[in-house]
Amino acid sequence: MENLNDVGSALFDQIVNPAVLIFSAASFVWFLYGVLNFFIAKFKEKPEEMEAGKRHMLWGLVGVFLIYSASGLFSFFYNLFLQK
Image (tube, rainbow, N blue to C red):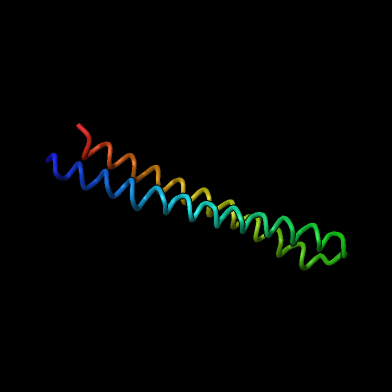
């Protein structure tokens, strides 16, 4: 069982944590792109581009939520089954 704990710990430290950081950064950049797109469209008075900016903001936030939810579930099951 000790060996399984080492594998789980290495998996979490070397794969899950960096993946969470990369994907959450990408989602945040997508959100910021939506904010920028929204304000530029608002300045130019283009309602269809404003809607596109709103969609980008929404999906950026959904992405961050999903990433941290999946990370939390992985951490929960790791602690439930592999930690003593």
